[in-house]
Image (cartoon, rainbow, N blue to C red; front, side):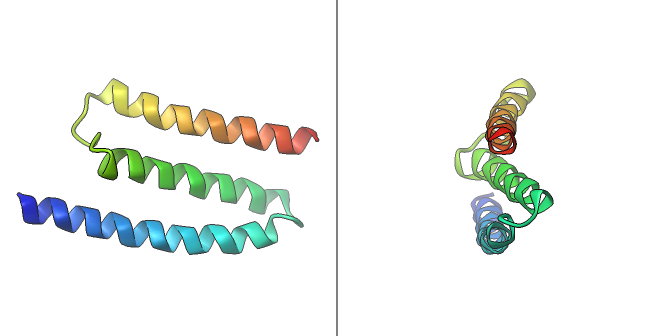
Length: 87
């Protein structure tokens, strides 16, 4: 079981590194395109989901708690996106 958990963490770590590079590339394009800006926030929400589930250990937590934590990061992303689009 420990090998399986280590494998899951390694896979999540690799995905997070890839998403960090993709997010940085999208951030360079975000100045010109609102769609790229929305993509940056989508990547950030997916990264936060991986961190909450795998690195904070909530993958086996109750469903309501997992959804609440992901909804929290989604709400923050929508608030930040809304603030940027309004200003």
